[in-house]
Amino acid sequence: MDQAVSDDVATVRGDAQGVLENGARRPWDEVRDVVVIGFGIAGASAAIEARSMGADTLVVDRFGGGGATKLSAGVVYFGGGTKLQRDAGWADTPPDMFKYLSLEARDAVAEATLFDFCARSVENFEWLCRFGVPFPPRGQAFKTSYPPDECTLYFSGNELCHPYCDSARPAPRGHRALGKGLTGHLIFKGVQAGAKAAGAVVRSYARAERLVVDDSGDVIGLVLLEQRSGALTSAKHAAALALANYAGGFSRRANDSIRPRLDVIATGVRRRFVRARGGVVLSAGGFVFNRELMKQHAPAYADCSMRLGTAADDGSGISMGRAAGGAIARMDRCCAWRFINPPSAYIRGVLIGPSGVRICNEELYGSTIGEFLALEHGGRGVLVLDHAMMKLSREQLRSETMGGFQLVFGALNSFVNYHKADSIEALAKLCGIDETAMAATVSAYNAGADAGRDTLGKHVENLAAVREPPYYAINCDIDTIKFPTPCITLGGLVVDGTSARVKRDTGEIIGGLYAAGRNAVGVSSHSYVSGLSVADGLYAGRNAGAHAGRRAKAPRERSVVVSSGARATARDSADELR
Image 1: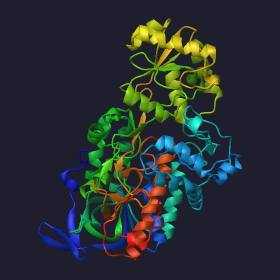
Image 2: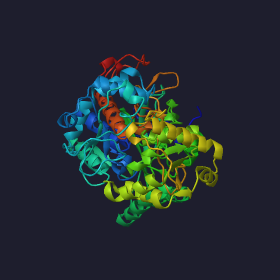
Image 3: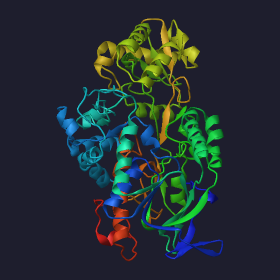
Image 4: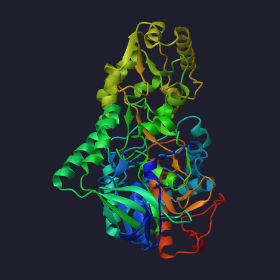
C-alpha cells in the first residue's frame, strides 16, 4: 500500500545525548519516560497506565483534548457480564461476546487479541467506572441507533439480526454514560481527571511534528511545536477549531478553508526536542478530515456528507508512524452510518439500490447498511415506503422517544428528503432507477411479507407489504446533506495486539513506538458497531501505556521481536521490553 506520508513528517536522527539536524547536534530540551500524542480515550488510558508503572509521563494534544471521544455519543462497547448487564438481568459471557465480535472484526486482529479484548471487558468497564463515569442501571435495553436519555444499556450493533443472532447469543453491550443527549464529554471528563490525578503532565496546544529515531530505527523521542500565545489568540483558536469540527464536518469547502488556518492562528510557536526513554504512544485520531488521504485510501467513503471527529483527525499520527517505518493496513475501511430508524416505521420499508435490487436487511446496524451502500451500490440507495408507512412515521415523530439528531433526521426524511409518486414505476423513474427492476424487487418483498418470511432474515414484526399509494422514496445516498452520513476511518498502523507496539512491513517490532485508537488497526478496524471504537481505544491505550511504562523503568538489551500470533497479555515478560 502507498505510504500515507509526506516529506514534512520525515523522521529525525538522534541518540541519548541529543538530536542531529542539518548536520548539527541539538541537546534534548526535555526528557520523559513516556510521551503520549493525543488526549482522547486512547491517550488518556495510556497516560494513566504509564503512570501506574511509575513512568514520568507527558501527554501532548494539538488542541484542548478530548478528541472524537468528547464529541461522540458517549457509548462504550462492554460485555462478558458487566455489572450493568447483570443488574439489568442479561446473561453474557466472554465466549458469547467473542463469538459475536468474531463476525464483526473478522481478521482485523489476531484471534488471541480479540479473545483478550473480550476476556478483559468487565475489568475495563470497572476501570472506567472508577473515574466517576456514570453507568447506573437505567431504562430498558432494546435495539436503536441511540438510546433515550434515561437508558444506559442497549443493543448497539447487529446482535439481534440475522445472521449474527444465528451464531452468537445476543446480549446488549452498548454501555451509555448517563446524561442528556450525547454524553461522550462525561467519559472524557472522567479519564482526563484520572490522568491528571495520576500525575501525568498534560500539555495542550502542542503539536507533534515528527518522531526522532536512533541508528537502529527505534523511536527515542519527538519534535514538538508548542503554542505560546495570549488569551485573545487562544479564544480565536478555539473558535476556529469549533468551526473546523462542525462546519468542516458537514462542508468539504469549509473544512478545506478552516483547517489550514488553525496552525496560522497559533502564533509564537516554539520548537522543542523531547526525549522519550520508554517510548512514544501515537493516539492522535483517524484521517477523515484529510480529503487527500480519503481519496487515496478510502475513495468509496470520500464523499460522505459528514466527517465525524475533530480537525485533528487528519492522519498526522499515522503519517508519523509510517515515516518511522510502521506498516499500515485497513486504510480502506470506514464506518459510514446510515441508520434507517427511528421512526421505527421506516424498518418496514425496502432499501433499494440504483440498479433496482434490494440492498440488505433494513434492520441491520447503520454502519453495516452504510458499508453495503458504499461498497456494493456506489453510495446510492432509496428507502421505499407506502402511504401507510409514511403516515405512521410522521405520527411516531411525536409518539416515540428520540434524541435530538434522530428527531431532526426523522423530520427531514418524513417531510423533505423524498420523491413521491402514485406507482412504483413512476417512483423509480423519478429516482433514476430501472422501473422494471424496482417493481420486481418490491413485488418480491411484498410476497415475502405476505408469507411472513423475508429472504434476508428481517423479523416478521417488521415485515409489511409496500402496497398503498402514494409511494415514497427517501434519499439514502451517502453524500446527501439532507440525510447526513457521519463517517470515521478505521484503519491505521499495524500493531502487536496485546502490547500496541507498532510493526514494520516485515513484522518486526519498532522499539519505542506504540499506537492506539484510530491511529492503529484494532478490534473495530473491519466493521464498526456503536461504542466499539471507544472500547478499542481504551483497551489498546491501556496496553500501550503499561508496556511503555515498564520499558522505561526496566530497559533490556535490544532484540528483534516478531509477533507469532500466540496469545499474550499486556503484562509481557521483561525480555520483550525493547
